[in-house]
Image 1 (tube, rainbow, N blue to C red):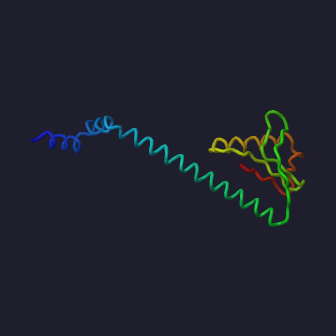
Image 2: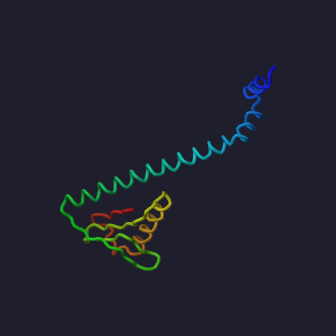
Image 3: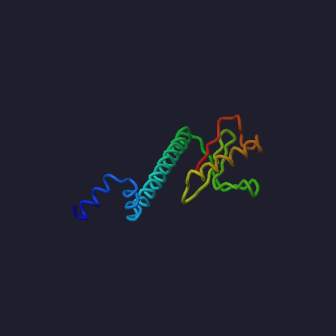
Length: 134
């Protein structure tokens, strides 16, 4: 039996050998990187869907003739938002980021929820609604 035939046989029959070869070739690193890339792409797809839904809400508000001017707002050092606007019926709060992953979005949602609890009347809770924008 030739070295080639023996090598192929070991690849087929010996799992430990097969995994060792994969390790030497760096294939497990490639597989890990591909898995990580797939997760990032999935996160981006979810973020894009969230942004599309938010944009649709903004367009819907604009089509109803509701005008809300937004600007950066600082409630205090912990609660600073790049986007804040209200017409006393609807409040829009958001952040402008060049990169926004799931953690960034969750942080914004958490900060808005904390702010709603702290400053109940300021954000017009209980009126028509609040739109969180990222």
